[in-house]
Image (tube, rainbow, N blue to C red; front, top):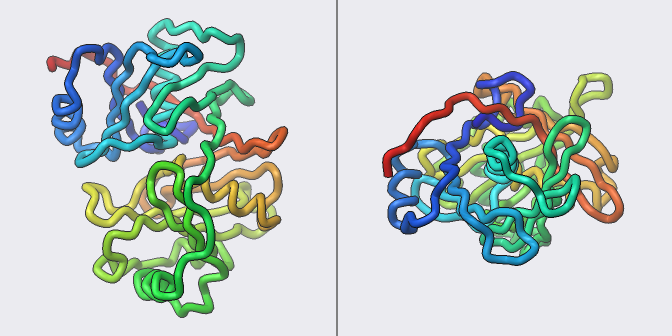
Length: 270
């Protein structure tokens, strides 16, 4: 799958194993490591009565309770494979973080952002570490907050998209922090924010497009009045990608959407 891009092969790739019933966690982890993608997911029958299907999400080294582009790509694949939601217009995904609703919105799938399990300003020593890792003066970090919704993200707000695009991270200084950086574009740019996310120690240090971070960032920025109730973020620009994340606050919920496309179909021998 390719997720978060209107043009196939310019978003974030995802492997989805449709018929994963009977596979052990060890077999799933081994295959996810072999694909060498940021995430690989496995579709299973639901165990919760309200869920339409269950998904397990693996990076190359660990299982995640939730992740954004795997949610959209898995939902797209489940529907393409003939899945029929129990409720018209909304499907319910069961994952390690609980139940996540996914709906069609303006021709794209969008998921309801899960609640943040840790939220608030980072500690002073972490803020200093972030500034060193991003090779920026501390006063360039307008805000920095924990945004944990499965992955342990830290969000950093900069003053402009240009600052975000110019970052040359010091990954040694970053240590094991998972960092997402966001800054506003000038009005009329076609997109509202620029995003970059860094995952030191992972097979892919900079993620092309990151749904979980954008979900947390939307709750943070819309909740604090720094972003409008509806906006579009770009991500992956420095990697030659064209990720577009569509965010909308509606009836007290944050919905995070993007395009998905199937790029490769076949049989996996496991």
